[in-house]
Length: 206
Image (tube, rainbow, N blue to C red; front, top):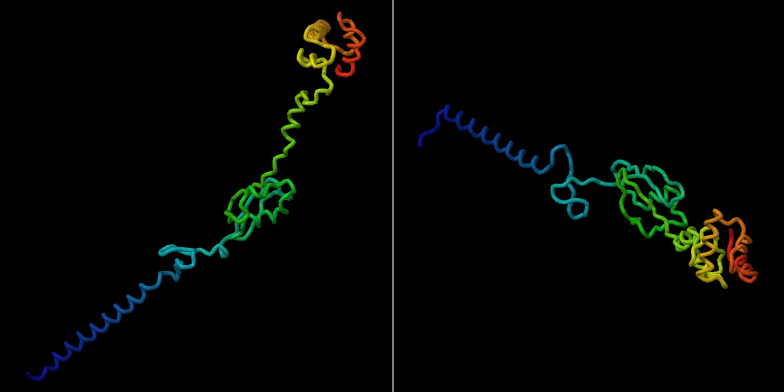
């Protein structure tokens, strides 16, 4: 095989240079694909804060959250807390729960979100139902005074010496006179004697 001419050597040399440049660029391009653009790092799925392809956001490094704390707390209001704060942190900022608070009804460990309202409920009073029943004027105490202005036949029938007939007469007398201002007025009703009047005075009130 004969020796290469000068022109052939130049051609081969140029081809070699081109191949080297293309190879170097290809290698650099492969390395660049291994890093996300802009220097953003992806979450490591092993740390529990992200999965492949999802951006990891560190709650401690985020913006603050503003929450409204209401209900059975010492100082209800709107508070700003650091990102990652819990419901318990919001309660402490609001002065803590009051003695009437039913703290067990809320999750103190829940993470707060911006714009959230934390409402601490109050315990129900066991005597509330009893008090409401007493407000209507009807008492479970059989010896409690009876209001003659609102008494029914059944109410009057509970008084010793007063039967259904006499009770009906008392209601008719009340209606005829537009009410009863004094228990002594009942002495005008036929069939009511001194002994019965004593019982009425002890049990009735105008």
